[in-house]
Image (cartoon, rainbow, N blue to C red; front, side, top):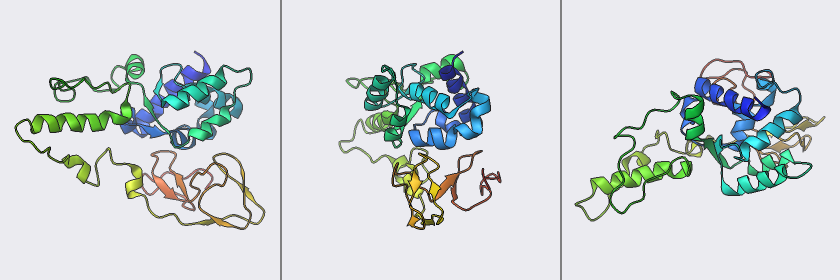
Length: 249
C-alpha cells in the first residue's frame, strides 16, 4: 500500500466517522486539506513523515489518476501534467481551493460495499423515454439537479407547465450550498509582530484588520471543528456543536 492509497483509505474512514453525508456529496478542495484531512492532525494515521510527502500524495489523489475521486476536468489536466514532470509542484493544489470533488462511487464500493446504499427503484428510477440515464459517478455535481428534473418529468406528464422543485425552496435542504447560511465575516487583527496564513503559510500584513488571506484568498475569520467540521468563530476555544476543544486553543 503506497501513500496515495493509504491517504484515500484514511479519508474514507474519516468521512464516515465525522461527516458521513460527504460519502455522497461533493466538498471543496480547501476543506479536504484544511478541515477534513489536515496534515497536522492526521500525520500519524497517514504514515507520512513530512508535509512534503503529504502534499505529493494529496496532489496525486486530487489529480483523479487513481479513480478515487471525481474531479473537474481542468484540475485533472493541470495536476496530471505537473505529476508527469521531473519536479511536480504540489502548490498548484491551492489554485483549485474552491473547486469541488467527491468520492468516486465505484472506488468507494470496492473499498467498503456498505458505505453507499444499494440502488433501489426509489433511489434510482428508470429514466423516461428519450431521456438519457443519469451517470452520477461521472457528474456528481449535477446529480441532484438531474434527479429533480426526472421527478418533475414524471410528476407533470399530463400537465404542460413543469411544477417547481419543492426541495429547492427550503432553507434546510441537504443540497443547499453552505454559502446560503453563512454568517457575515468579522475582521481579525493581525499581530504587529506578523503572522502566517494557516492555509498557504504566506505572510499576513502586520497590524491590519483583514478577512481573507492576500495570497490564497482563504477566509481567515473562521475555523472548523476538527471533530465534526462545524464552522466556528476565529477566537472560539471549543466547538458549539460537539464540545470538542479547537486545535491550538
